[in-house]
Length: 139
Image (cartoon, rainbow, N blue to C red):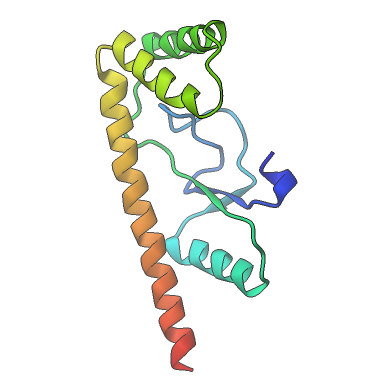
């Protein structure tokens, strides 16, 4: 769907999209980007072209929740969500809660690590954008 709306999808130091609790999914990422500077450059190029689309930077989880119990919990939660008619924005919180319960908190630790990783990468990208903008405005 993202490609339909011309949303660039970038893999942060990865060639495949990460799954939520795993750094890998088996799904190829169209573009690998290895630095915040490169992402900033792509972002600013889109802005310069007056593109109104967003951008997705897929960041792999550096502290994955592993094991068959996590995958089993995910699949079970997906079935439960479907059976209970849970849809849209309610699906993710439902699944996170169910998976955390079924993995006795293992997935919660993994999720917290992913949040921290996303904040770190986002800050690096924001700093890189600010550096580019500073140079552009000095001219």
